[in-house]
Image 1: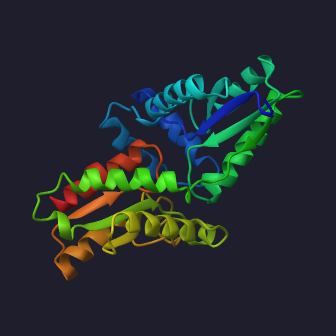
Image 2: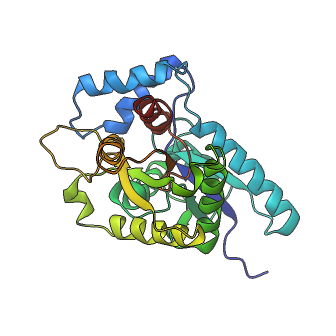
Image 3: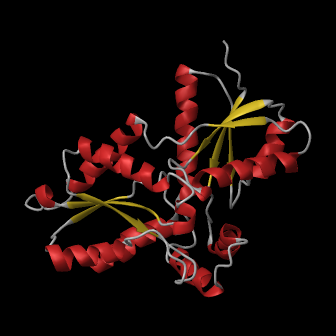
Length: 278
C-alpha cells in the first residue's frame, strides 16, 4: 500500500538478433573507445557462426515473463518495461514510452551483479541520458544496488555449478578444478571500483556452498590494444597452465560474472575454451 513506485524497468546490454544487426550493434558497444576495426570484424565473425543472433534478448524476454508471473501471483501489481544500452529496445525509446504512459517513478533492475564502470556507473549514465532525451516529465528512476553478495544469487550459481560438475565422468568429478570467470576490464578501470573484491567475495561464498577450495577466478573477453594491461589471468592461459604444470584433468567453468549470456561470452567458453581442452 505504501509502494512509492508505479513501474519496474529492466535495463540490460542488448544484442543483435540477425546478421544485419551485428556490426551496428558492435559499433554501439565500442563507440568512443577506439577499438580497432579489425577487432570488431573478428568479434562479428563469432556472431555470424550463430546466424548473428545473441541469446541475451531472448533471455531477457524469459526474465520479463517470469517476473510478470511472480508479480501477478504475489505483487506488487506493477507494469514492467525493458530498455537496452546497445540494441533494441533502446533505453531512450523505453523512457519515452514510460513518460507517455504516465509513469512517474520506477525502480530499475540492471542485469549486472558487480560494480565496474560498464556494469554499474555507465548504466546510471545511460538512464540519465534516456531521461534527458525523453524530456521534461520523464520518470524518476531508482537503480537497485548491485547484488553480488545476495545469498540467493550464490545459491543459484552453486546449483548451476553442481549441475555442470555432474556432467563430468564420475571419476573426474571429485578433483575438477572450478574456474570462475568474469569479463576482464583494464587495470586502470579496476583500480577505481570494487569489481575484483566483489568477484572474489562472491567466488568464495559459492565455493563454500560447494565445499571446495579447488577454485580460481579468471577473466575472459578482453578487447582493446595489447599494450593496455587488463585483469588476468586469461581463461585460456589459465587452462594451459593448469594442464601443463598441475596435470589437471577436468575443469568446470562457472561464468559468475555474467547474469545473461552475450554471444561473445558463449563463444569464449563453449567454443574457444572447449576447443583448447579438446
